Image (cartoon, rainbow, N blue to C red; front, side):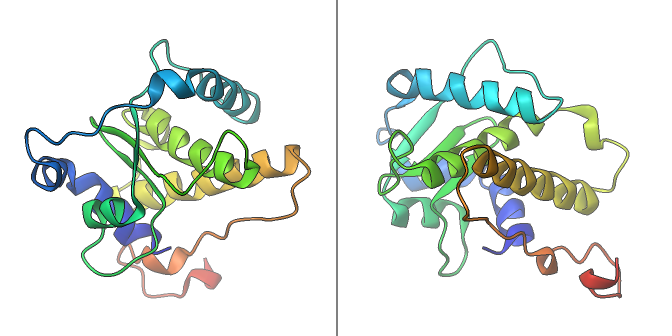
Length: 173
């Protein structure tokens, strides 16, 4: 998944959501149905990081993958989950985080982005460096969560999407 372009799309797509859904077509939040799962994932994040669970759960919407792709991509992509600041978390309806631990880890990844939003942890970095650090951290926590479940599968962070004005390849950093 192109991390930096996707992350920038996520940050800049707040207005896209309004146009994509129209004023009367806003999806209904699945937060209430997912509340126990969200709380358990926030507890896992607290164990794996220095973030603390919020008092209020974020809105979580289940949409078709094609609708999520239309929200966050300007070209064909394979996005199954996304966090849109001030909007919420969007999960593809083909994910089953209640039953599939890999899908649950994808939701955890988006919850990390939710907790990162407005957090001062990366405040001293340029926007690009902050975006990269936040994405790297979300991948690291997602993989740490999978490890706690004894799942061998890992997600790979592609640093190549984060140029940040540096000329050396990501592997040289």
